[in-house]
Image (cartoon, rainbow, N blue to C red; front, side, top):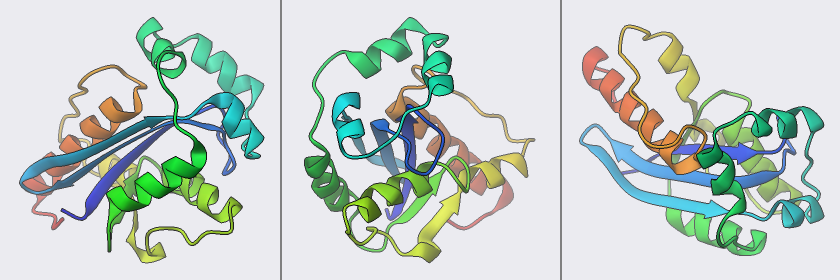
Length: 172
């Protein structure tokens, strides 16, 4: 499985948004596979130069108790460790999918670039789930888990993309 659905929870919407959670799941037409989930301290994200916006913080205040608690409860991981672990999770020749051509993949790539590191996927392997979703609205989307939990959202999006691939005979 070299397809990887990525979902980020951030405290901003720009390419340098403060990442507070990364969820990812490997998948192919046979279904979902290995998963990755990590939380990053907002304080550390800002120390790494990532930015937060008041609008996004206010948006988070309106989300469910479960979604907000996921960002503030439990262990966080050092950004350098996240970089190392996520590269290992991706492996070689990963095809990364994000929900929007200018969000998840771009923000995550910016983290690597901000540390003068090579992005761990080839630029031609960056794919947009939102485009596929919006051009196949007849295939229903079924959310699992907590909305705005990075791993639950990645699972839901990957499962939906697999359903679309089967329904429309799209290769993955």
